[in-house]
Length: 172
Ligand SMILES: [Fe+2]
Ligand SMILES: [Fe+2]
Image (cartoon, rainbow, N blue to C red; front, side):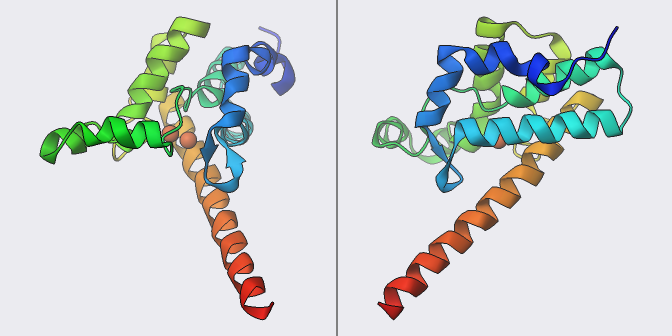
């Protein structure tokens, strides 16, 4: 199988209206959307998969899985989501927390819209490990690692932006 580049592998997903909606969901900090985060995670997963000498078809599969790993389709920071969570209390509330369930939601939704193989579904479902099931295969490890690398970078950047805003407010 001939190797395809990152743009070729991801173009149909990036152009899809449901994926474009991810621009409107804030994620890690004021400047970061689920779209930005997903694209960065996919780029990171693509580089890792090439570095680990995965077969071209698995590089494609893991890149697409990483791009879709947060394709859950709602804003977890919205008032609507907070209202939804208020319906639950105690252990039920923990079970329904976004951090625990969004991998499974994203896997099901991504499969419905774009079609996934079982290894991609497992990778997306377990990307929140250790808050989600143990990663079952190499694709799942690449997606969970790429997500953590990118999320750490984005959250650190967001914290520095907030500190900078606080400092400039104090000086003014
Ligand atoms: Fe996630
Ligand atoms: Fe993520």
